Image (cartoon, rainbow, N blue to C red):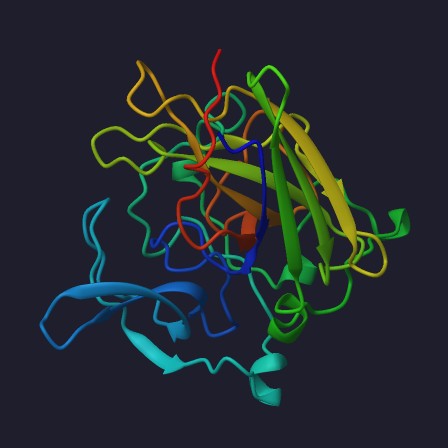
Amino acid sequence: MTLHATYDLSLTTQGPTYPPSEVMDEQGHFVVIGRVNRESPDGITRSEWSRAIVAADSPLPRFGQNLPYRIVRELPEHLTPEDEALVLHTLPLPLPCNNYPMLFAPQQCPEAHTLSRPSYPFHQVPIPDLRPEDGPKVTQPITLGQWCKARGQLAVSLTADRRSADFRFEFTGLIPDSVYTVMSLRQRDLDPTGPTRPGPLGVPNVFVADGRGQASYHARLPNPFPEAGSPGANRVVNVVVLWMSYQMNRGGAIGWFGLGGDIHAQLKLKAPSFAEFTTHP
């Protein structure tokens, strides 16, 4: 039985495939680094890891299904100077091109689906109660080039009794002096027949990148990898590192709005993982 494994996290801007990204440009297009839905020659929609600028009015299928995105243009692996200079924005509310029927903070913000807000440049998000004299630290535009510097490594270890697992992260290249959180994605969180609510990886699940964009984080979860098929099993299958545009964390919720409204995925694993681990109650 595997007791320890390490993983390199992948750069992203994406949570699920809808909305296509949790980051927009100033024209209101999605900046996608992740799974891009394209129509293959045989007419099937395929989601392969790549990069593209995607239109906000892309066709929207039912939750759990995919349709080809309307691609405005491709984004090269090695960004041009113009692409590096793209200023990143939040998604507006209601979230565009969204089919995920999830209320992320049912006790804190039950009205999230009814709110209306514009898209904000990351450095101009209206942080509640903030006054200029209080010394905001994120004051300059955050660009795609800066976003793409992020790197992260994860080490997962089971405890001696195999009832819990430790998740240890090391990061470089993050947005300096910023609040980040880490969320877990469980196998039924994206289940079209009845999704469970994604939750934090540990509570509190927050860390702050230092002035050089470096940080570390640790959490221990009880029984995160129950035996597949056991009653009520809902294994952790991925972890997502989120930049918090409002510079706040939300206790037992990953965010109030989610999916680019106030949380922005920057690092994660490309595919469901951790099948090598088994824990028990």
